Image 1 (cartoon, rainbow, N blue to C red):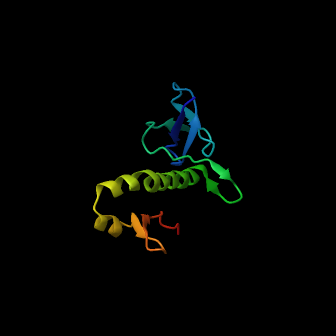
Image 2: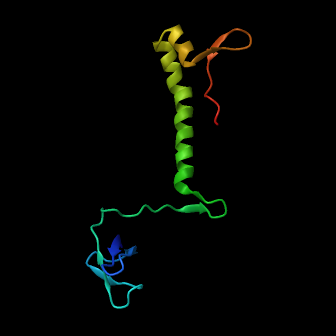
Image 3: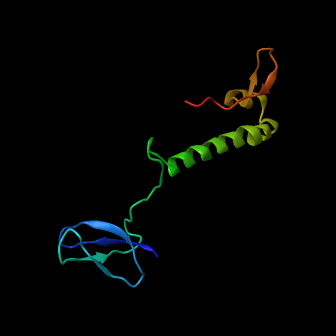
Length: 116
């Protein structure tokens, strides 16, 4: 069943409910006897996120964003930087931090910046 947004014209309360596609009105629980009208599906529907850990309040979306960002950073430093080092000049690579000098004075591929 799809999720639709309903609005009560009397009390201006809105809610989202899972209903059949042919349902146009549902009863309002705050106003006795009033009908809530179904709104256009894509107009201002609320964002729903799942809480993975209710104790810490971490949502699935925030956790997924961090994982995706970590994978992008890892891919950049392991795959893209070696390609860039072969393409760009030594000066550009040093300025961008792709190449760095280690303690022995050798030129090596840099590491990802530390997380804050």
